[in-house]
Image (tube, rainbow, N blue to C red):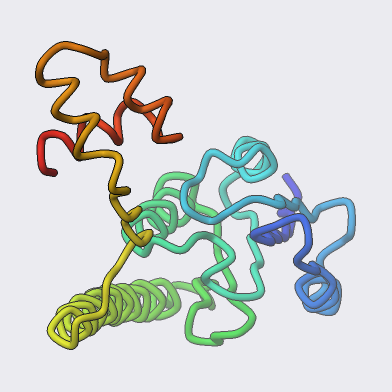
Amino acid sequence: MEKKTYGYVRVSTKEQNEDRQLIALQEFPVLEKCIYMDKLSGKDFNRPQYQKLLKKMRPGDLLVVKSIDRLGRNYEEILLQWRMITKEKQVDVVVLDMPLLDTRKSGNDLTGTFVADLVLQILSYVAQTERENIHQRQMEGIAAARLRGVQFGRPRKPVPELFWQLKEEWKDKKITSREAARQLSISQDTFLRWAHGK
């Protein structure tokens, strides 16, 4: 059976332009009818065209993507998909932006697959470490800002003078919390939060 070359394109939003990816794939060359495209976030693999492509590919076929992040953002997921495509489906993968990510073998040479797997593992580690570093820097930045007195979230509504009188009336069961909130033009929840000192 003839081996086929497929391409996969993903753009995160409807606004993002897919032209760069399409041009790169067509220059490879991948036939236009063999290119599958999703306009969805890369956070998971429940993408209609990607799923359709997986069903279509047969052992010995080739999948071409412009860059590894087109497969997804989460490297654990990418690794899982990479193994499924290359090991279970026995489909070769070429990542155009990274020549080392090319699993095509020449003869009995397994170097392609081995190097690509190794590079992907390293990329995965680097990406994960970078995510953790970004998170760490964010947490440190927030802590430093709090020390400087920076307030996060919406500013709290100032408590009007009338509140204290209405709170006493509410405590004495002269009015309901709903009525007190209505007079103050605030929500019942806000009145109760203020009344309980939160």
